[in-house]
Image 1: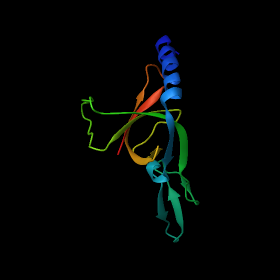
Image 2: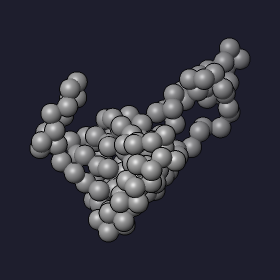
Image 3: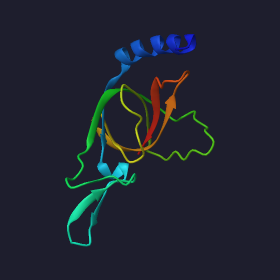
Image 4: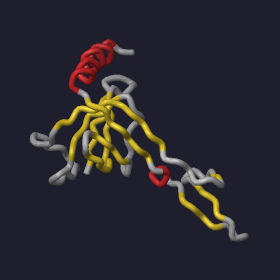
Length: 132
């Protein structure tokens, strides 16, 4: 790992432990492209985007981590659509949130619009996540 990564990671971790709150990400199978299809014999199976199939309905994946809420008040990003009511969370200790995931934070349950890795090195330290 790079020295920059180590330095930033060592600064971020204590901040999340001090200021972070629990966050839960629930990934519905449909986010991963699972769809129920009927075969010619009339039976139903589940098929993923990658072509894999299974008989049982895929279950939702659930991840827990820590998040710090921020705002978009000074954010002037190019090609970013930020609407009133959107929430910005910095999330760590989870896989990358995907568009369509449900995120529970405090008393709110919101849907992921986008998530960008904050990665000064090869590994993401956290994800800058837009929710609606």
